[in-house]
Length: 67
Figure 1: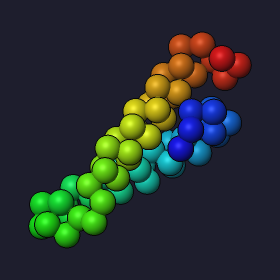
Figure 2 (figure 1 turned 180 degrees about the horizontal axis):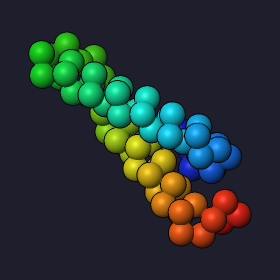
Figure 3 (figure 1 turned 135 degrees about the vertical axis):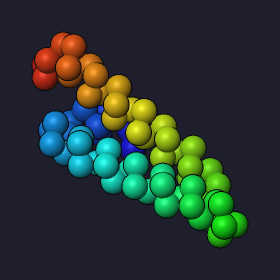
Figure 4 (figure 1 turned 180 degrees about the vertical axis):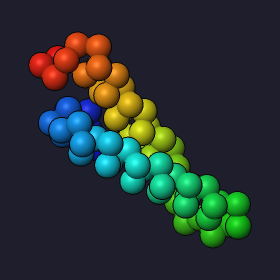
């Protein structure tokens, strides 16, 4: 997910997407623990998406919705 796409989401959508990604990361880590993970690079991608969302949320918190 691109940063530009994330910036177009509302605050509620950001919270929902963040929860979904954290849940997906948990499931991926569990699959990795039991050696059933097909694509280990997916963990890295999900972690980056989580970081992007958290960065946008922090930017909105500091500068308002017009940032």
